[in-house]
Every structure is written in C-alpha cells, then in structure tokens.
Length: 397
Image 1 (spheres, rainbow, N blue to C red):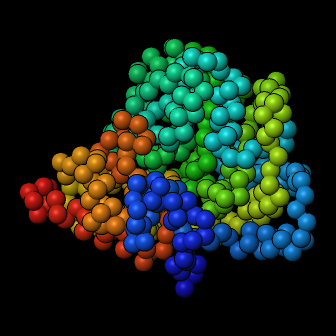
Image 2: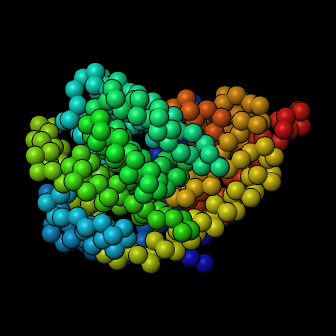
Image 3: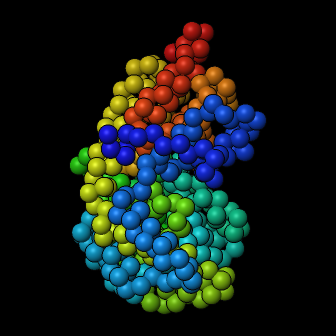
C-alpha cells in the first residue's frame, strides 16, 4: 500500500486543517469532525524532499539562507519541461508565499481607491487583500456553461475600463477550470487595450488532471509580458504549505526593482532555511511522485462525483480540470447555506467550505478537498450523505 492510501494522524500536530476547526467553524467540541476544507493534502511530501530535509536537519545549523543558483535553475527547468515556458534567472523574485507576494504587488503598483478586478467565485484573498489596502474591488462574476465556468467578456471589459489591476486565478480556484489559450489571449487583449496590469496566481498550475494542459499567461503574452506578474510556488503541488516559499516572475526590470524596494521597506524576502532545500528537491527529483499523486486525485474525483451524486440526488459536482478541489452545487436541495453547514457540522460531523467564502457568486456551492486516502474520502462522503438525508426525508430533492 503506497503513501497515498495510508491514513496519517494529523491531529495535535499544529495543523490548521485538523486542529483549528473549532475556531474556524465556531464549535466547542471538534473531536469527531472530519476536516475536508482548507487546501492542503493528507499525503506526505515526496520522498526526495523528505530525504533532502533530513540531510539539511542533520547539518544542524540553520542560519540565514538564500535562493542559490541551483534553486533558480530548478524552477527554470521545471517550467520549461512542464509548460514549455522559458523564463530567465533575473525574472524571479522569491517571497514567503503567494498571498504576501500578491499583497506586495497590489501595494507597489496601485494607489488607495484604485479599482481591482476579480472574477468570483474566486480565492478569497484576492478581494480581501485589495479591501484591506483600501482598494475598490470590481466583481465580474463567472458564468456556468456546459458545466464549467467561463468569463463574461462583455462584463469583464466594462470592469477593466475602470481598473488598474486584474487578479487572475490560473487555473481557477474553486472551480478547477483550466483556461484555454483563446481565453487567456482575450484577457491579454482587453487588459492591454485598457492598460490594466495582471497578477496571475498559478499555484495550481502543476495539478493538471486527465488531458488538461496548463498555459502560463506570460508565456503567450509576447511584448505584453511586462504587464504580467506570475505568482508560482511548489507548495500546493508537493504539500509544502508550511514551508513557505513562492516566486514572482516579472519580465520588466523596472517593475522588479520596485518590488525589491518594497521588500526592503517591509523587511520581507528572507526565506526560512528549509525553503531552498525543499524547492530544489521538489523540482529536481519529484516528478514520479507527482504523476502518481495526480492519478490518485483523478481517481478520487471520479469516485467522489459518482458517490455524491448517487447518494444525494440533487447534488451536482463541477468536475475539475485541475486541482484536488470539488465545487459542489447544492442549490436544488432548497436549503440555505446556514442550513447546509449546520447539517454537515452537527449531523454529518464533516467540515466543508461554504461557497459564500468565495464571494456572493459562490452561494449555493460547497468546496471539498479530495486530496486524502480513499478511506478518508469515502468516510467524508458518507457523512455528507447522512447530513443531507434528513432533508430528502422531509420533502427535499
């Protein structure tokens, strides 16, 4: 039995996912709650990373560290091999995480009360960071066509006319949509037309399912690549969220200089001693692990979709093209979000994310993390079915 099917005990390990359910969901007793919410995996990191970190620990000295040339080369080689995107060493700026990287770009290249476009439902920090920095958020909601999210480009352009910056989720979280080259090209055309900068969060870009292929928007931007800030990290791919390391890829020298000045002004940019080791081992030596993990996720998603839709008639899963997250439409159950969450937490004893967390466009949806052993996933699905069975018995769908 491989590590993807072994159930690891994560309680009492300082895990946000497992040990902070009470604070997040307002519960006093969480001893029997199964967490399937925040996006980290219940899988151990790849063996190559564990080996490299053990060797680093055994060295026993943890002084100030930096991203060496080998670290940078590993990123360059990975992007060219996986995505056909050739980036240069000088384009990379390292950061403690995607969220602080996005925050630094917003603060550096926009002013208070500037307008920033997002396409909800979308990863909450996109609009939260903007609001916390006194920027105005313009929402251009995605629309569902043939079971997948698409961009309403007419509305999107209307919002861009007023904006300084657009934050793209590529691939999309929570819907798992992989944007096509045509869609990305249209985003570039419209942002260029209205002189709007682009932040592209591509943290899920390695988590391609089936025949899906990720296209970094900067790869196809041509001469407009200077308006794109691409945010990358190995943390989602290799389950390293606690080892905080991310990159901003920016082709424009002057923009990089402004970001470097921002980092100096805020005392940020110095990474922990384990970040260079983990990043290099991930990108140099963990391909095989990733392929096996992706097949495990694909199998889990197929299983979860079939089980959920069969056991709870009325539920509809938006099958992801990327990521290990399931976006579940429960609108046909005729329940409010509060009602659904209470049933899940109090009857099913399972913690999923409410769709409203991703903006008003997420109402009627739940987000489920399927990156866990099959035994755990089956348990979670049975808990969901138990929680929502009462609604069916009382005349619901």
